[in-house]
Length: 198
Ligand SMILES: [Zn+2]
Image (cartoon, rainbow, N blue to C red; front, side, top):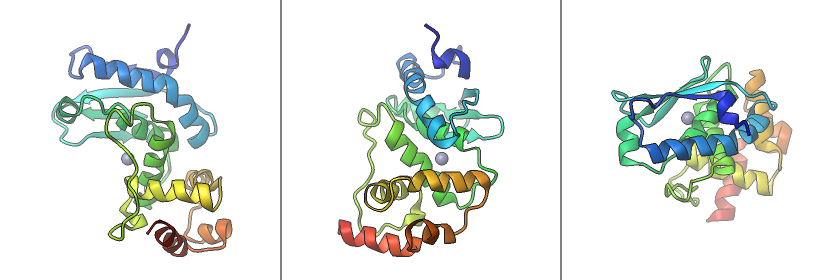
């Protein structure tokens, strides 16, 4: 049976820079999550994507959106051999392919929202969304913002993350969108979230 990874993923690990077990986990994640990611973030269109292990990159992973290329920092993965779903976050970026990265908190919050929603091995990697605390703000991006989005989806409007993605794709996002979609500003919604989770 043809797998999604046979068609849409190029992962050259011939130099063995990524542990074999982690490589298998990543490919498994791709086969289980990529369709869902593309359905949610890219109207069901699957982009061909590649993974390139990079020894001199000091970060975790990064996506070059136009080329749909994801680089992996091999030092990080040697120390975190179960963090396969960090790639799920990057595949959200591949699917987002926004014209603009800003607001960064929104783009990165949606990427971790996607990791939460479509990830396969988050638990194995010790990755989870945080509970609210008063040091947080929605502009913190990543997991903090993702936890806010999950709460909004469950308590305010089920299609809100999808609508935010849609606006980012069309490059029509403004802060006004929050009011249009929910009747409240993002700051008012954050205050509601804080109150409900304190
Ligand atoms: Zn990211």
